[in-house]
Amino acid sequence: MGWAEGFIAVDWGTTNRRGYRLEPGGTLADRFEDDRGILSVPAGGFPEAVAEIRARLGDRPMLLAGMVGSNRGWVEAPYVACPAGFADLAERLIWAESGRSAIVPGVCLDRGRDADVMRGEEMQILGALAAGMIAPDAIVCHPGTHNKWIRLEGGCITRFRTVMTGEIYNLLREHSILADLLAGPAEPGEAFSEGVSHGFEQDDLTAELFSVRARFLLGKARREDMSSYASGLLIGADLKVGLRLAPEGEVVIMGRPELTRLYRAALDACGRAGREADGEQAFLAGANKLAELLR
Amino acid sequence: MGWAEGFIAVDWGTTNRRGYRLEPGGTLADRFEDDRGILSVPAGGFPEAVAEIRARLGDRPMLLAGMVGSNRGWVEAPYVACPAGFADLAERLIWAESGRSAIVPGVCLDRGRDADVMRGEEMQILGALAAGMIAPDAIVCHPGTHNKWIRLEGGCITRFRTVMTGEIYNLLREHSILADLLAGPAEPGEAFSEGVSHGFEQDDLTAELFSVRARFLLGKARREDMSSYASGLLIGADLKVGLRLAPEGEVVIMGRPELTRLYRAALDACGRAGREADGEQAFLAGANKLAELLR
Image (cartoon, rainbow over all chains, first blue to last red; front, side):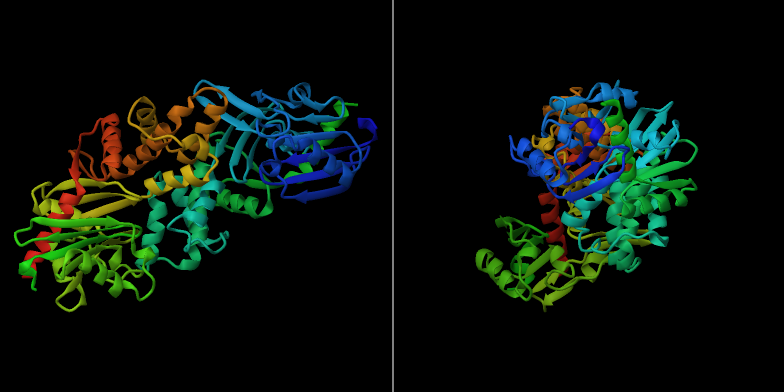
C-alpha cells in the first residue's frame, strides 16, 4: 500500500518508542508505547524490530523520527542545519527501505562556537506549526531528559539550546549525596518558586545544591521541600539560559505534563507567560504533514 | 597510656579512612590507609572498628576527625559555628570513650539563609595555621568530592562555601550521556583552560555541558579534549563562587595532588595566584596541636 492509504509514524527515542497508525485524512487509528528504545535493539536488529511494529499496527509505509536516525539507530540521517523548516526535513528524509520506511533527519545548530543537536523534537515543533498550535515566530520550551529551548522565525527553527536539567536532576536523585533528601516528588509551590528565583537570579548552582543539604542538616529547611527546591533551582538556571533566546513574549511549553507544569510554574515565578501544548498531538500533525508530501 | 606518651589520629571520612600513630613530640611513627569509611561500618560496629585500628597502630588514646562525628558515625559531635578557631574545637571535643577517644567536631556556617557544613577539613585548615603553613588571614581552597572555599580571619574560620564540583563531575563521567566522552583523564592544558574561562565568565553550566557533546558530534571538538574541557568548565564555575570569598590575594590549595594541580591551573587561567599545601601534613599538625591541649 502507498502513503495515500495511511501509514505508521514512530517516535523512537533512546529508551522508549511510541508507534501510531494513521488513516488517510490523518485520523489516529491505533497506537502503542513501550520501552524498546534504540539502546534495547541489538546491532543489526532494526529490520526485525520494524517488522514487529508492522505486525502490531499493520503493513503500511512508515515514517520514523528521533534517535532511530542517530549513529546508534537503524540508518543514520544526517542533521539538517538551522535555519530548518518542514521542506528541509522532507527533502532530507533518509530511506531505510526504498519508498517504504523513511527516517526524519534531526536538526543541528553549527555556527562558530555554538553547537547543538536535536532528534525528534523537530517533528513536534514543525508539526505544531503545521497544525496552527504555534505561530511561525515563537519560542518553544521542550522539557525532557534534556530541555530544549527552540526559536522559530518565519516558520523555521533558527536557533536552539539544550540544557541538561532533567538528566542532572535524575543523577542527583539517584546517585548523589543528596539522594535521600530528593526522594520525594518535585511540586509547584513555595519551595519550588524559591528555588526557581535563586537559580534564575544567581549563578552558584553547584554550590547552592550543597547548601540544600546544609540547610536541612542545620534545621533551616524541611525534608519535604528539598525535591521541589532543588528542582526549582535547576529549572531556574535553565530559564536563565533559555530566556536569552526569548527576551519577550509567550513561551510554548511542549512535552510530558508532569514536566510542562513545572516549567509553567517556573515561568510564572519569573514573570513570564507560558502555555502548555500537547507534544503527541504535535508529533502526529508533523507526521501527517510529511506523509502528505510523500503522496 | 596518657596523651603525653603519644596517640593515634584518624581522618575518617565517608568512604576512606587514614590512621596515624604519633610519638611524643609529634613524630609520625606509623600510618595506614584503607577504604573502611563510615559507610562500611555496620550499625553498632564502631567499637570493633576502633579496636582494629588500635590493634594495627598500638593501644593509645585516639583523636578522630571527619564524618566519624556525623549522625552516621560513631558518636555525633555537634558542629561548632563560625567563627571557629582551635580553642573552639578543643572545647567542644566529644568523648566517645572517656579520656581515651575524642571526636573532633565539624564546623558549620549558620547565618541567615547561608548554611554550610564541614567535617574533617577544619583539622587540616587549623592545623596548617598552627604549623605556619598558612597565615591567620588566608583563603583556602580544599578540593575533593566537594570543594570547600574557606576564609580564615584572625586565625578563625569565619566563612566557607561548599561546591559539589567533584561529585557532579563523577556523576557525569559514570552515569550520564557524556560518560563515554569523559572516559579520558582531565589534564591542565589548553582545553582545560578554555573550559575554566567559560565556566568562570558565563553562567550557562548545565547548557554548556551538553554543548560539549554537540561540538563533538558535529566534528568541532576532539574526543581527547572532552574530559579536560568539562572538568575546566565545572572548576571555572566553582572558582566564580569561591573567589567571591577572596576578592584578592593568594589562594592556598589543600588536598590530593591530582586535584590541587587542576585548581592551581584554573586559578592561573583566571589570573589568580595559587599555592599548593600538603593536606596530610596539615592534618597531622592539627592533631598534634589538639593532643597538646589534652595533656
